[in-house]
View: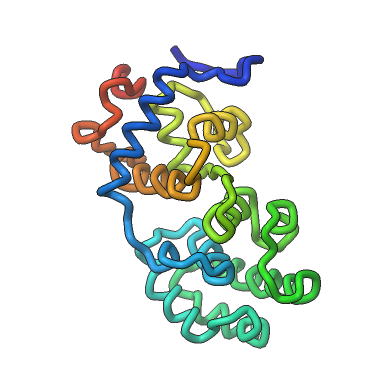
Length: 227
């Protein structure tokens, strides 16, 4: 069955299937989460930088730039003294040059309004240039330990395929998918759960040629049943 609209009930996904989904991915995560330098820290500044660099960019490509960036600008104060041109040059291999300008603008705003400290509230983060809902929630979850779920194309693809959802063209703005993401998340360790979905979507439930044969969700996956 394809769910095309949100039910009036809060728990609109099948409870038994939802719990099984969560259990299988939790087990999968024990041995399969990827290792990146920004996942080894809870420093809000380092995570803030990482989230900017990761926007629409493959994580493996970000690693060397991230490490070079933090070596050159280890604190928000040091970054605030850098020129936009310097930051653009450093981030040039990642493309999306507009992000360098927005990163610099955000740092200046953080200095002006938050005493040089990365804000820990989603609403405050959303007010910064270049920060959308995904980035704000990811920072809240991974830098401040808040139970905030995220939704990107990887997460959306998993939810659509497994539960038979139709999220529309712009996944990041889809209320159906955000509601589903909230419902499937555990009540604790949501930061780890976010990473689980990101990595599962990047390595198993891929956009092209998904690895259904080795997928721990194949027994109850709506996508596999229909294809």
